[in-house]
Image (cartoon, rainbow, N blue to C red; front, side):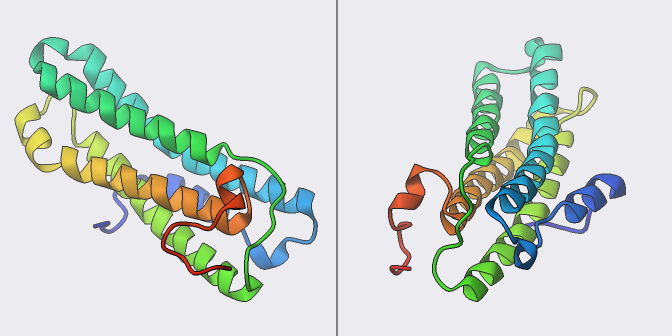
Length: 177
């Protein structure tokens, strides 16, 4: 899965600095503000990923097959789906036991940061001067899998934070909280 940081150090440092400190949430407005900052930081990195894919698609249409164009479009749509999940707002209300939920959230956050770093690295592997066949053979599936996993983890965070309509129902595969 994710490897050592290959995205710029300032980007990763900025993301880490914006990770929520759940034990510091004192009010609903503080929690919502901290969530918004973190989600926007994750979204900004993902936007770079989607923008890069769109740039390749726009600059190299003659070098891509219809299937490859469709695959890039699907990857960009996955990024858009993640944006919709990161855009969830509402009253933050940790589900279940606060300590266990905070531990789960912190683990998810660490995995999300590694995954967003890998997604951006994989997207950047498809460059205008690089042969595309190797990227579509090796990296496209990994990027798609990473984006799908990222989307699922973002929704799991929504559930744990009590955000969005999905939070009104039990998360599939979880015991009742």
